[in-house]
View 1: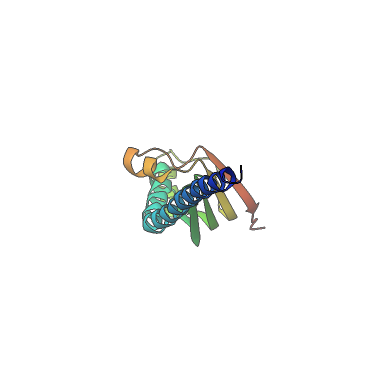
View 2: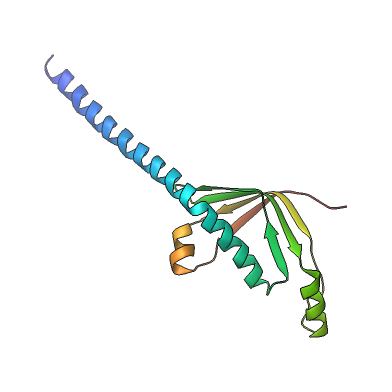
Length: 138
């Protein structure tokens, strides 16, 4: 009976070692992809806001943090700024919206964020955004 206990322990060590190795590979791959995709994500996000608002709004932010394992992204110090020249053009064409907004956020959380879908399938950035700590200009 004393011989069976060390064998079970040896098998358990191998299983835990393999699981640890797999998790380290996943974390390393996620970090590497995050570093390589960050400039592309910044560019795609700015283009998305610009094209979806027909040039009326632009987005500026300081940093973006992505986590591909959980499928989330966090954007810090977000500012969505209207272009008043485009707004005047839209007023002349009678296609302008009723209101023009200046939006500043301390943090914008995006859930279900999958950059491969954005890059390869040209899907939308997210289906769920959480606005955190809205900064009011007044």
